[in-house]
Length: 541
Image 1 (cartoon, helix red, strand yellow):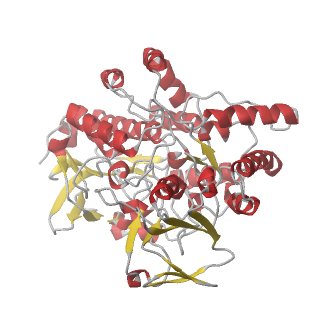
Image 2 (tube, rainbow, N blue to C red; image 1 turned 180 degrees about the horizontal axis):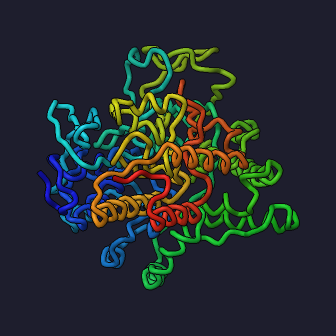
Image 3 (cartoon, rainbow, N blue to C red; image 1 turned 135 degrees about the vertical axis):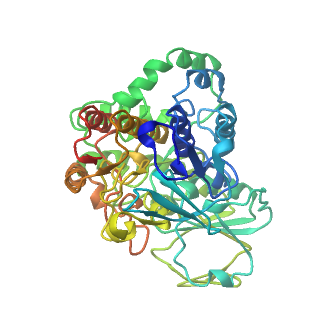
């Protein structure tokens, strides 16, 4: 029996089970300890870091600036850690997360190499029974899914993969040891964020690189480089206000003052100047917020698309290749707006070829390489940069069952439903950090994660102070949030785009917008209002 707090007494083994030891799981553990809870983290890998541990392909960087993409809960941590580059590599981010784990002694409560296969709520005792892959079970009062939004790879839907006699690599599961592609004939399938980052690196090594593109992406140059020490110190001296602005006043969790005007409130010359200024800064989140109607007006969005298309044409020498790389008919930022280092220039290399899968689709993988509609291409290596089953993939990978045995997969058969992306009706005491229906992938994940973890921790504290142990979203609260989120996104261009934001990249996945488009600032106000008003839309006992 746990006795961390008198009102938390129960027959469970632990007070709170946290699934995942990434950014969210580590901070949730930290806050749970502050509450005096007996907490355990279960991580299927052998190290902390989550997405930044599992993903290690060449060229991988974060598209949020390092000094923003970091924890804000510890002033000491903020001041002592020094970032080397404006946009950090995977390796540096992982070193940072390992440092955090050591600094706050988190590893002693993390169970590594432990995959959770099921979590069932017991209606009689109000506990979650959590089963590990090895058959062992643990019971817990609270159950937190901190499994990340981009953690379950999407399986390539191509026949014959097992027939290939060469080496196959996945950007979502890259080997720990470096791979040498020198002198190799290499194929890359996929042109999303991971493809755009890995292609320039592979092109420098390979004898020949062929890029198989189905859908081109809009991408902006990173203009990355070392962080100026003077700039870093100024920011550290003003971190308190900087972080407050990110949490409370920004749309995406990144301090940036957008132009609160329509793209048509200014002259074409001024509009071009604004785009160019943001383009030269290497700031995808800022660029998509350049004008207040870029994501709601087709005409306004076309002005941004035309600007980026012009940049692509200027960078790519072959006009036909340039047109293939331009996302004709797409809206800027309704698919992820990527960030690159020399991506478009890579197609000027003599050893790089671009082929369109819309014109010559892949029929199957064969032992020698890739058979397209018109010919056989022979390769030594194939790299799949085909992305993730985003946001819901990790949640549905576990057999989660709530009240009366209702499975989460059954409840979400027609698409995910939640209250603020944090709780799901009929699943008491289960919390989803950056779950579907929250800003999550449309924001700086550190800001959104800290917001959710703090909300969950304060919620549990509230329960204890009021002699309660259980909370669940009401059906009405969930329905109201889903209706609100749908109404907000219906006024944008997102539903008109086939993207992983809509679940369109996974065959059979319901077409539902997976995030909340209302902005980090507005979302946080709603979360705070709910907590400060005694949790309307939730049932407490």
